[in-house]
Amino acid sequence: MSNAVAKDSWNKVYNKYKNSKHWEKTTGMKNQYMCHFNFVWGKSAFNLEPKRPVKNYLMTVANGCNPK
Image 1 (spheres, rainbow, N blue to C red):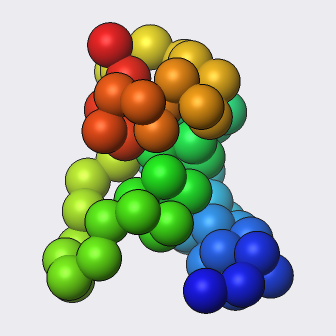
Image 2: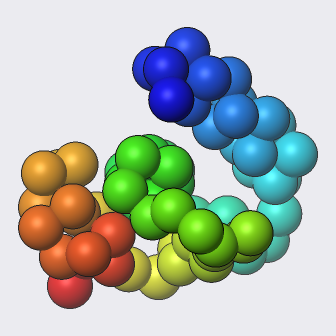
């Protein structure tokens, strides 16, 4: 899918949940989201994990969208 669709869908997630008490580490969450968006097909839903460490996007991808 296009980068514009990915950015738009991320913005919708961010705007909906950014004020949640569970929302942490926006950069890491965005990297997880974009990784799932780009590489995980066939799932109707996936979990973003705010407690995971913030890694750059390439490290997030290298760790299967779940940075360690």
